[in-house]
Image 1: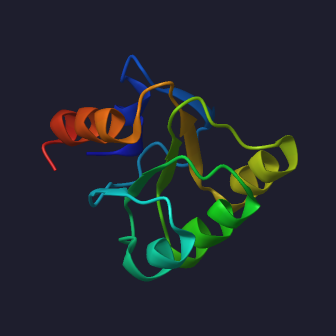
Image 2 (image 1 turned 60 degrees about the vertical axis):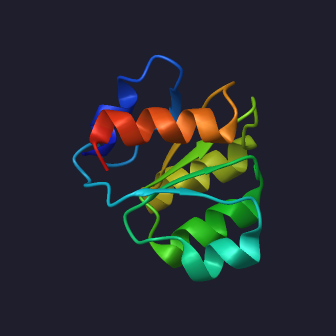
Length: 110
């Protein structure tokens, strides 16, 4: 599965496209930044409700390929600009974390 495959999910809208050809390793769900720092897989899709600049910092540290913000959460413009600069894809959805993660999992057979 690649990031571009997530673009096609009907409940997901992209705020920062990142590298559409980047491979996705797995889906990861976590809302505690300290856990995400130690457990998020490189190349993963991180589904979370944590929508702040620290989320981006953790994604950068862990080499997360894509952040999906659930429950209608978003990032401010300066954080989105930083995500663009760092090549981290950011998407948003109104769905709960589990529901979005399950859609990604099923779409990519991860």
